[in-house]
Image (cartoon, rainbow, N blue to C red):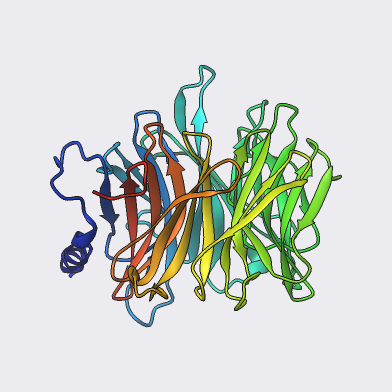
Length: 414
């Protein structure tokens, strides 16, 4: 049955694939991965061999009435998006069926020579029947073949889940996440773990948090930077935080937004001597969302702010990456629709919305593409050859399937 589902999906998605291309060396490609269950894309990193490491969560539901369990999925591909290996944690033969594991962020580990040595995954684990305030942070180390070398579940006096991870100069792991207390209040959370995954310190940061970006940055002085969204008095703002190393005191904890509108930050990247954030704003004529871009200095000062989208449509900013030419590539989503001039935008459902901007935020080009179904982006990467790679989830007939797409330097799929 699973094989039939997969064949049907590939037949539907075939309209996206490249034409007149040598299948051995495609300049662009569209690849889909599914094992018969619902998969949700989480994160992607480019590897030294030109390929990609993908992180996802698989929803395992043996039948229609059984409560689903979740497993972490890692996929390694070559530079053309072809499958090299795939690992499920725990695997399908495991007797652990009362715990759900979800992956949210993956980082490549390096040895003392700077060579890739494995991967670190963070997310969460939760026992069947537990509440969010009982969630454990899950951290998992693997070798380059995806075999677990060390793993741990961490829980202080409240529920915690992992969103992003980085490695400091001591070789310890700093994990960013969310902390949920029994009153269901959600705050930002940091923990440092030794190479043996023992906790050296941890702390939470108040004022509320949601939609944490799955990236955490550390500078040469071991200061930490991250971003997300904060909700106060029924309004959302971007939250940008910097902390000194091993300190409960923040150097700054900023709410960045417009008091008249809702603004959210969904992803952040390093840019120049500062940072760039992508999210959404309802600062539009119809109060529908547009994609929001903000450029910030190292001290959190706002240097530029721009919005992009289609009139009378809901556009969401999901991921951001610095492009080869010094500009930025933004990944968002938009509902398929007929534009005011009669032009068909998209192919059906939600589509990938790719926008290239220069250093000043001026739009250089935009592309909308996807299947006839809902396509939801998780992450975009800018490749060293000027092309772009998108990792996301396509929904077909209620089944979520992982999608890996490579475009050319103008966002085209040939």
